[in-house]
Image 1 (cartoon, rainbow, N blue to C red):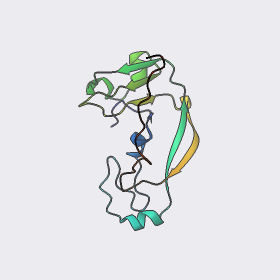
Image 2: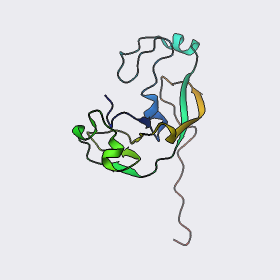
Image 3: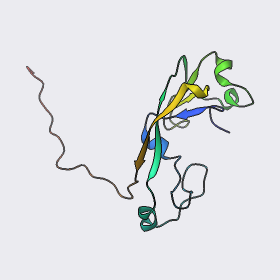
Image 4: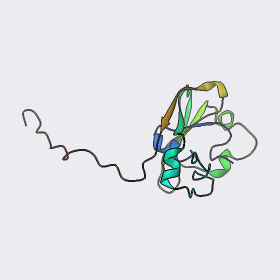
Length: 139
């Protein structure tokens, strides 16, 4: 079952959403799936990964800072129980690594764009030397 009950889960960081996108060759290698064992050559030849960029009307948001499993489990609508339209799970060390947003009404969000992308197997280094500190004006 999902962490905050049945709903449409959204993220404000693409890398969070990317964790749920399986390999486009073997369909593994994402959360709740077996690891991907495909070679980089196989993955590079495959179609790019795809992610939906969505808009959402969050309405009244309940900000969850102290996640309790029992609050969101069972066959019910958590938003109705809490008297809100959506839940934002705040990132808290040891509980939730990234912020999550959940809307419980299917018509409260819609996909606006399909983003096609490829993952990098190595660290991407920023170009050039690091930026220098700028002195404050008048200081």
